[in-house]
View 1 (cartoon, helix red, strand yellow):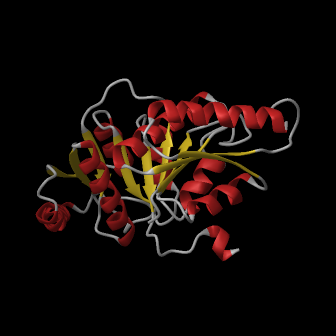
View 2: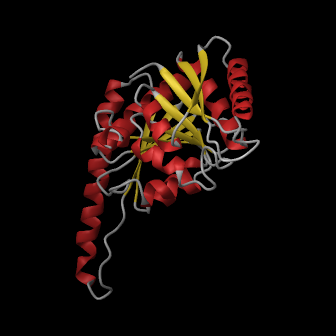
Length: 284
């Protein structure tokens, strides 16, 4: 990965929170920071070049104030917002976005641009709602052993190490739905659950052995993944999920669970996909 974080800004409060998060992350991990804005000519004054330039430099100045030792640069992008940001992600270590914006960057609601970039970027995408008031010293990662959750785990380990934080590995398993008349399945369901718990716990062991400097705890719960992550996020500084999974944690596409987490978890959420996958920009 290239050693550069890219943060997108549009002048909104969430994008300011994204700049602050990205600047602190760049300082903490010794990475360069690039602040970008896609200037869409959709109407004065917000769409004017002068407005865009001033807003971009204000954001870059804020980043420099928070990370004075980091290499902070800025760039004005043109073209479609999603395409421009996905293009930036190809050479980035990670990308940081606000949860919603003024319309010129992150869309009117969490969904349009933030969701598209999170699903197609070549690097991890961190979505930030607001500036954190309390630090909990914990990173939460959803892990089901799939390729996407492996990538999420790698990013979560790096974040936990840089923060000197505890890593909480969470696996959520939903009980199969049976007919109320199928009373004979009780033992089989319990056996299946115990097997899921055992396998999930075993998957964490190699990560604990490879990273003895990090305190890694793991939980296996019989609960909907979004609900489980929402609860865990209450004491987390960052939640990390893969963009897809085996069905035990994240959905087959960036959709049900990923959407639920991004919509309902208040702390920053990182969506990670394997770097070797082609981006939407590369496929089109």
